[in-house]
Image (cartoon, rainbow, N blue to C red; front, side, top):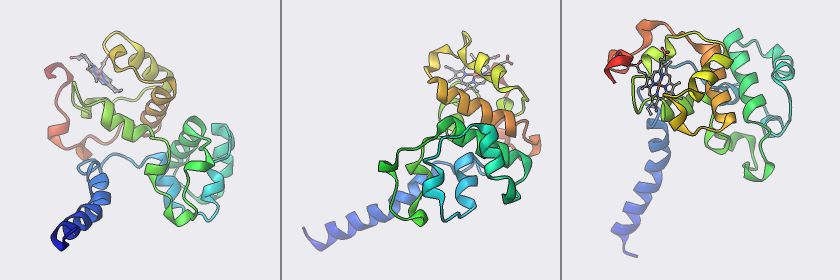
Length: 182
Ligand code: HEC
Protein backbone atom coordinates (compact mmCIF):
# COMPACT_ATOMS: atom_id res chain seq x y z
CA UNK A 1 0.00 0.00 0.00
CA UNK A 2 1.58 3.34 -0.90
CA UNK A 3 1.87 6.23 1.50
CA UNK A 4 -0.82 8.35 -0.12
CA UNK A 5 -3.38 5.55 0.17
CA UNK A 6 -2.36 5.00 3.80
CA UNK A 7 -2.77 8.69 4.55
CA UNK A 8 -6.18 8.76 2.90
CA UNK A 9 -7.32 5.71 4.89
CA UNK A 10 -6.03 7.31 8.09
CA UNK A 11 -7.87 10.53 7.32
CA UNK A 12 -11.08 8.59 6.67
CA UNK A 13 -10.67 6.66 9.92
CA UNK A 14 -10.10 9.85 11.88
CA UNK A 15 -13.10 11.51 10.26
CA UNK A 16 -15.52 8.71 11.18
CA UNK A 17 -16.34 9.65 14.79
CA UNK A 18 -16.87 13.24 13.66
CA UNK A 19 -19.40 12.02 11.08
CA UNK A 20 -21.41 10.25 13.76
CA UNK A 21 -21.53 13.39 15.85
CA UNK A 22 -22.47 15.66 12.97
CA UNK A 23 -25.51 13.43 12.26
CA UNK A 24 -26.95 15.30 15.25
CA UNK A 25 -25.66 18.71 14.19
CA UNK A 26 -28.46 21.24 14.09
CA UNK A 27 -30.38 19.40 16.82
CA UNK A 28 -28.47 20.63 19.87
CA UNK A 29 -31.64 22.51 20.86
CA UNK A 30 -33.45 19.21 21.58
CA UNK A 31 -33.16 18.31 25.29
CA UNK A 32 -30.52 15.62 26.03
CA UNK A 33 -31.47 11.99 25.73
CA UNK A 34 -31.15 9.26 28.34
CA UNK A 35 -27.81 8.03 27.04
CA UNK A 36 -26.21 11.48 27.04
CA UNK A 37 -27.48 12.10 30.56
CA UNK A 38 -26.11 8.75 31.74
CA UNK A 39 -22.64 9.36 30.27
CA UNK A 40 -22.56 12.92 31.66
CA UNK A 41 -22.66 11.44 35.19
CA UNK A 42 -19.21 9.86 34.54
CA UNK A 43 -19.94 6.98 36.90
CA UNK A 44 -17.16 4.42 37.29
CA UNK A 45 -19.82 1.68 37.60
CA UNK A 46 -21.60 2.66 34.34
CA UNK A 47 -20.81 -0.69 32.66
CA UNK A 48 -22.60 -2.53 35.48
CA UNK A 49 -25.43 -0.01 35.54
CA UNK A 50 -26.44 -0.59 31.90
CA UNK A 51 -26.68 -4.35 32.46
CA UNK A 52 -29.15 -3.96 35.36
CA UNK A 53 -32.85 -4.71 34.97
CA UNK A 54 -35.00 -2.13 36.78
CA UNK A 55 -38.35 -0.38 36.40
CA UNK A 56 -38.64 3.38 35.81
CA UNK A 57 -39.45 3.92 39.50
CA UNK A 58 -36.45 1.87 40.59
CA UNK A 59 -34.16 3.80 38.25
CA UNK A 60 -35.50 7.10 39.57
CA UNK A 61 -34.60 5.99 43.10
CA UNK A 62 -31.20 4.70 41.90
CA UNK A 63 -30.20 8.11 40.49
CA UNK A 64 -32.02 10.22 43.10
CA UNK A 65 -28.75 11.51 44.64
CA UNK A 66 -27.26 12.70 41.34
CA UNK A 67 -28.95 16.09 41.58
CA UNK A 68 -30.40 15.90 38.06
CA UNK A 69 -33.23 18.21 37.00
CA UNK A 70 -36.58 16.38 37.18
CA UNK A 71 -36.99 16.07 33.39
CA UNK A 72 -33.49 14.58 33.03
CA UNK A 73 -34.01 12.15 35.91
CA UNK A 74 -37.25 10.95 34.29
CA UNK A 75 -35.71 10.77 30.81
CA UNK A 76 -32.79 8.71 32.11
CA UNK A 77 -35.02 6.38 34.16
CA UNK A 78 -37.38 5.79 31.23
CA UNK A 79 -34.47 5.18 28.82
CA UNK A 80 -32.85 2.51 30.99
CA UNK A 81 -36.17 0.86 31.89
CA UNK A 82 -37.37 0.69 28.27
CA UNK A 83 -34.13 0.04 26.37
CA UNK A 84 -32.15 -1.87 29.02
CA UNK A 85 -30.71 -4.13 30.21
CA UNK A 86 -27.83 -4.19 27.73
CA UNK A 87 -25.92 -7.43 26.99
CA UNK A 88 -22.43 -7.36 28.48
CA UNK A 89 -20.90 -8.77 25.30
CA UNK A 90 -21.35 -5.56 23.30
CA UNK A 91 -19.75 -3.31 25.90
CA UNK A 92 -16.17 -1.93 25.92
CA UNK A 93 -13.72 -3.04 28.63
CA UNK A 94 -13.33 0.38 30.19
CA UNK A 95 -16.16 2.71 31.31
CA UNK A 96 -14.33 5.66 29.74
CA UNK A 97 -14.75 4.02 26.31
CA UNK A 98 -18.53 3.67 26.54
CA UNK A 99 -20.37 5.75 23.92
CA UNK A 100 -24.03 6.06 22.98
CA UNK A 101 -23.30 4.05 19.81
CA UNK A 102 -22.66 0.96 21.99
CA UNK A 103 -26.04 1.34 23.72
CA UNK A 104 -29.56 0.84 22.31
CA UNK A 105 -30.89 3.79 20.35
CA UNK A 106 -32.93 6.07 22.53
CA UNK A 107 -35.97 8.27 21.98
CA UNK A 108 -34.29 11.43 20.77
CA UNK A 109 -32.24 9.61 18.13
CA UNK A 110 -35.30 7.64 16.98
CA UNK A 111 -37.29 10.87 16.80
CA UNK A 112 -34.68 12.49 14.57
CA UNK A 113 -34.44 9.42 12.33
CA UNK A 114 -38.10 8.45 12.08
CA UNK A 115 -40.16 11.59 12.43
CA UNK A 116 -38.83 14.03 9.84
CA UNK A 117 -39.42 12.26 6.56
CA UNK A 118 -42.96 13.51 6.03
CA UNK A 119 -43.22 16.66 8.12
CA UNK A 120 -41.31 19.06 10.35
CA UNK A 121 -40.19 17.96 13.80
CA UNK A 122 -41.02 21.40 15.31
CA UNK A 123 -44.81 21.03 15.64
CA UNK A 124 -44.28 17.54 17.12
CA UNK A 125 -42.01 18.71 19.95
CA UNK A 126 -44.37 21.62 20.67
CA UNK A 127 -47.05 19.15 21.79
CA UNK A 128 -47.41 17.88 25.35
CA UNK A 129 -48.93 14.39 25.57
CA UNK A 130 -48.99 11.39 27.88
CA UNK A 131 -46.80 8.48 26.69
CA UNK A 132 -49.89 6.39 25.87
CA UNK A 133 -51.26 9.19 23.66
CA UNK A 134 -47.96 9.33 21.73
CA UNK A 135 -48.09 5.57 21.20
CA UNK A 136 -51.70 5.75 19.98
CA UNK A 137 -50.66 8.44 17.50
CA UNK A 138 -47.76 6.32 16.22
CA UNK A 139 -50.00 3.27 15.88
CA UNK A 140 -52.72 5.28 14.08
CA UNK A 141 -53.53 5.27 10.36
CA UNK A 142 -51.18 8.14 9.37
CA UNK A 143 -48.21 6.63 11.21
CA UNK A 144 -48.77 2.87 11.06
CA UNK A 145 -46.51 2.74 7.99
CA UNK A 146 -43.52 3.48 10.25
CA UNK A 147 -43.26 -0.13 11.47
CA UNK A 148 -41.66 0.82 14.77
CA UNK A 149 -41.25 -1.86 17.43
CA UNK A 150 -43.19 -1.48 20.68
CA UNK A 151 -39.93 -0.63 22.48
CA UNK A 152 -38.98 2.02 19.93
CA UNK A 153 -42.43 3.62 20.20
CA UNK A 154 -42.20 3.60 24.01
CA UNK A 155 -38.75 5.20 23.83
CA UNK A 156 -39.98 8.01 21.54
CA UNK A 157 -43.18 8.43 23.60
CA UNK A 158 -41.35 8.79 26.91
CA UNK A 159 -38.67 11.09 25.53
CA UNK A 160 -41.40 13.37 24.17
CA UNK A 161 -43.55 13.10 27.30
CA UNK A 162 -40.74 14.23 29.62
CA UNK A 163 -39.16 16.82 27.31
CA UNK A 164 -41.92 18.35 25.17
CA UNK A 165 -43.18 20.94 24.70
CA UNK A 166 -39.79 22.56 24.16
CA UNK A 167 -39.69 26.41 24.09
CA UNK A 168 -40.76 27.46 20.59
CA UNK A 169 -37.94 30.04 20.33
CA UNK A 170 -35.38 27.18 20.59
CA UNK A 171 -36.62 25.54 17.38
CA UNK A 172 -34.89 26.65 14.14
CA UNK A 173 -37.66 28.06 11.88
CA UNK A 174 -36.75 25.70 9.00
CA UNK A 175 -37.53 22.74 11.31
CA UNK A 176 -40.83 24.23 12.40
CA UNK A 177 -42.99 24.24 9.26
CA UNK A 178 -46.74 23.71 9.78
CA UNK A 179 -47.75 20.01 9.59
CA UNK A 180 -50.34 20.59 6.85
CA UNK A 181 -47.69 21.74 4.41
CA UNK A 182 -45.69 18.50 4.46
C1 HEC B 1 -44.94 8.40 6.55
C2 HEC B 1 -45.02 9.82 6.80
C3 HEC B 1 -44.93 10.27 8.25
C4 HEC B 1 -43.91 10.02 9.13
C5 HEC B 1 -42.59 9.30 8.88
C6 HEC B 1 -44.30 10.66 10.39
N1 HEC B 1 -45.50 11.28 10.23
FE1 HEC B 1 -46.44 12.38 11.65
N2 HEC B 1 -47.89 12.86 10.31
C7 HEC B 1 -47.98 12.37 9.03
C8 HEC B 1 -49.17 12.91 8.39
C9 HEC B 1 -49.63 12.58 6.97
C10 HEC B 1 -49.79 13.74 9.35
C11 HEC B 1 -51.02 14.60 9.17
C12 HEC B 1 -50.50 15.89 8.63
C13 HEC B 1 -51.42 16.99 8.78
O1 HEC B 1 -52.16 17.02 9.77
O2 HEC B 1 -51.33 17.82 7.91
C14 HEC B 1 -48.96 13.70 10.53
C15 HEC B 1 -49.21 14.39 11.70
C16 HEC B 1 -48.50 14.27 12.87
C17 HEC B 1 -48.84 14.92 14.12
C18 HEC B 1 -50.04 15.83 14.33
C19 HEC B 1 -51.19 14.95 14.63
C20 HEC B 1 -52.35 15.68 15.20
O3 HEC B 1 -53.34 14.99 15.48
O4 HEC B 1 -52.28 16.89 15.39
C21 HEC B 1 -47.94 14.52 15.04
C22 HEC B 1 -47.88 14.91 16.49
C23 HEC B 1 -47.02 13.62 14.38
N3 HEC B 1 -47.38 13.51 13.06
C24 HEC B 1 -45.98 12.98 14.99
C25 HEC B 1 -45.08 12.15 14.35
C26 HEC B 1 -44.04 11.40 15.03
C27 HEC B 1 -43.79 11.42 16.52
C28 HEC B 1 -43.37 10.72 14.07
C29 HEC B 1 -42.22 9.76 14.26
C30 HEC B 1 -42.48 8.62 15.09
C31 HEC B 1 -43.99 11.04 12.78
N4 HEC B 1 -45.04 11.89 13.00
C32 HEC B 1 -43.56 10.56 11.56
C33 HEC B 1 -47.09 11.53 8.41
C34 HEC B 1 -45.92 11.06 8.96
